[in-house]
Length: 174
Image 1 (cartoon, rainbow, N blue to C red):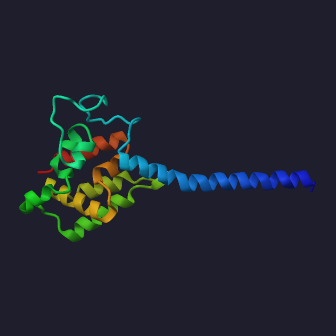
Image 2: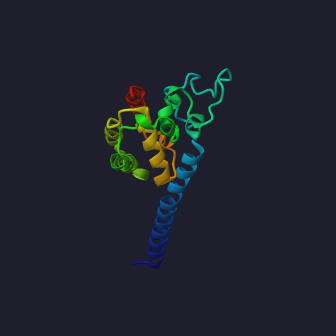
Image 3: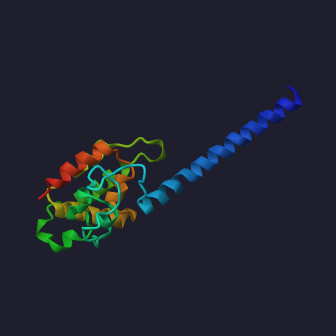
């Protein structure tokens, strides 16, 4: 083989390796930064009464972090608040063991960078809940386990059509 061909081949391998490493390192960091900021500028919230134009100035600002970061009716369900279940402990029907399994099932449904998400696992997990207090308890356990808000985590990877279904499931909770 010619010396210049070997140099080009080695240079090409180095470039491909550097790009692969940068992608492997940077994509998760960017995704985490977007998750922390709740930045979904390109993805309108299907339940946003203002059509993605910001907060409705006529409504008071919510005080819990879940509702504050999510506009519209979906975030208004107090079950998404990790502390709601503490105010209604008698309404918690799910036991801790089942709740931990649900938390793990939801977390593992996110396929990560490659997009092998399992939205059916999320809906199956949520269908095991009976009350908004159950949802709140699961939200609390999710936050304790992964240091992430459950609702924001779901918004980070679930498509809009699944949000509507998730909302219909969680809205029916007592």
